[in-house]
Length: 130
Image (cartoon, rainbow, N blue to C red):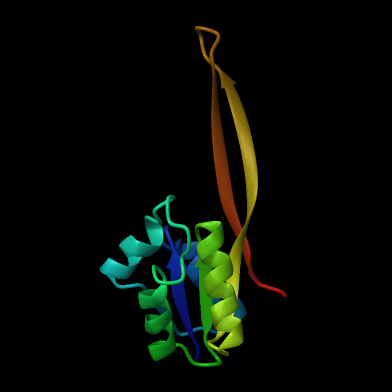
C-alpha cells in the first residue's frame, strides 16, 4: 500500500489522515526528519536560487518515494513548484495538496473593534496538474 510523504509546515489533522487513507489508499504517513523540516519551513527570502538549498530534500525524496506513493507538498511557492516538478519529472509518487473550505466570522467587540476568526476545514486532496 502507498505511503503519503508530508512536505508541509503544519501537522496533519486527524481529518486529513482519515481522508488520505480513504481517498488515496495510503497505509502510512512519513514526515520529513526534523532537520529537513526546519529547512522546508524556513526558506531564507534572500536566496537567489533554491536549487542547492533544496538538494537535501530532493535526495531524501529520491531515496524513499516509489511511483505508487503520494507526496503532500504545500509551502513556500518557489519550493512547492520546484518539488512538484521534481517529483513529476522523476516519477517520485504523485504530488498532491490539501484543499480547504474557509469560513470567516466577524465579532464586534464592546469597544467597537472587530475580531475576525477564520475557520479552515479540510475538503480533499487534489493532484497537481501540469
